[in-house]
Image (tube, rainbow, N blue to C red; front, top):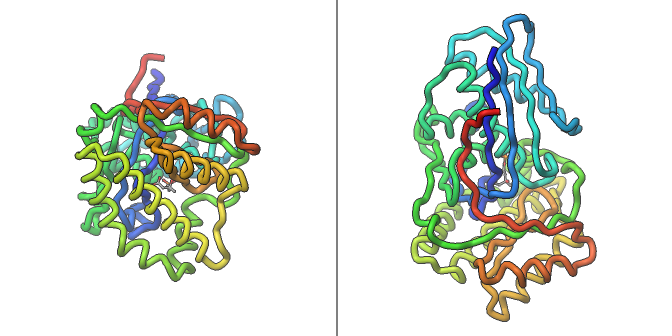
Length: 326
Ligand code: PMV
């Protein structure tokens, strides 16, 4: 049957999602706010094949991450909605390191959601697509949209109010994300297991969840006002609070390398001299620096000088996920 191909871009959360209120429906314990990135993308092709007895998943470039079980579970959701029992061949390519804290699961499940719903003939609007993508990975809901994106925590047990939507305000604010790669190795512990460990074993988890809505509200206000210093302060506070929660888990979760800390210090020193830049870190050792356009060159130079920084990648805001003609 005809192949259906979709491209989705990864996104980096400025206000983080960390922790679940339901494992079964993959509902987040907190909302989140992200920027979709132009530079990192996943291209996924889904082709239905009536002769298959199970789904066949392959990385186009032979990555080592074994995602086939998660992909099969995800396709089961799509098949259930489409009332189909046909299996599929899924081929995926990332233009960046997989499972290394660069949000490959975000772009991966957004691309899979778009390609698979098209292949199985499901008509979903973007909000419904974000809810489906969320079932694969919480951050994937946000990669359905471009630019700044808000993911709602929602209150309902059935998850019907737990969707992502774009924040229009952001499209006219020229910002960039500069990423310092400090390791290309896959992370030691995946975010799903790490979140569970935090929820069960970190005494700071309830403080993280309880103080989160104020961070989200503050970040939205700063974005609407184009207040970079205000946004910088809340972005760093939120990221370090998440990592404090991880560090307080038992056993502790420490994703940073020495170069991670050196990069954070370099950016904080730059900011003290008036450069509009701030850091965020996910479940991995890479440092993501949000900055104004005018600061991008200074930030890149400063990161590239740090021993242990393997490469520096500059990205503008990226588009939402979309089907392409292969
Ligand atoms: O979508 P997941 O399950 O890979 O979790 C993402 C968690 C963080 O990247 C650390 C934060 C976020 O909001 O993206």
